Length: 479
Image 1 (cartoon, helix red, strand yellow):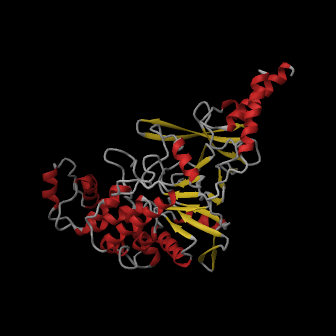
Image 2 (image 1 turned 30 degrees about the vertical axis):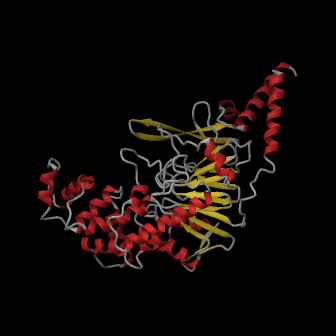
């Protein structure tokens, strides 16, 4: 027992020594704190709440300003599910225009799929309704016209819709198929808020969507200024995930790019070329859609940083592979920051091998208000209020080996935050039933956590817990 105690003590000393002098020299440090938000999906109240936090953005005379010592990064997915999509795009585009070097807009799947509106609508009079949206088209006909054609075969359906097919129905069906069935109604209400006393027909709403793609249209301006990835101070930001499968991959390029900075630059150039081609009228260009959407028969796209996920088949958060972490650290990267995959009520941090992943998408949270996310060089701070009014905090650096945040317990719960004014932590389990995932939370004190923690790769917190257990045992034996 004493030998194991001394052995753990030496290993902990090694962890402590390794904590010093390990910051790669290639990390750029411009001393700007970075405010991060994403996956608003039309919820302007969340953006307003984030701005009112005042860390990076703030209101001055009804205009949003960016603090001089700050950078702002939006992780993508600005529109659709809430009633403020136009206001969100207006705010983001205005910030990018006034602070082009310190505001970064990432492209999410909800931005890219809007380009399909152009081909889907403009082909309405010359091509049949695509099979993929027929179920949604039938639903719109049932709701708008009152006709139930669920049992129609493909041929019967095409014959039936030909005389009634129009741009408005196609747009509604398209939005419903993109998990944005309420977007058409939200747009109408937002237009009415902008124009009190005026009513808007279905055709008016349709034309408003179409205006988004004009020369100065909201979505067009966003897409023309958006990027797939960005790197600042050793942090790399993408919408979905960076994995062993997609790292270095560039569509239509056989060889991978193994320099991280060059890879991100090439991806951004490729995106810019694809977007420009679409707005020049090449509506049959599909490379961008293949990259942003799930692979055929799957829920993710292993080759895409936009539609990749840091999750296992069971729905639990999953850290990158050891080899990928090693490669990214060699290139000066110590943290990946993403949105896209909902994480329950709170953002989640994954910690492994002196590396971190911050999963920032809480778009399905039951908690009102936006999480406060601030990154300063190697430190990340996330604060979210719990239902009981207590503050849940993530405060972490990749080299803080004694920090239990991100650790997985023996019963497969993830430690996601420390509860203020206590020694307690909140842990989360994800349970799967059929194809549905649900999150479950438990409050655990530090002693219980030490007993539950398990070894996950290079976890010095595991050694610390062993050390505490051995120390207690030896003390009880009479050292």
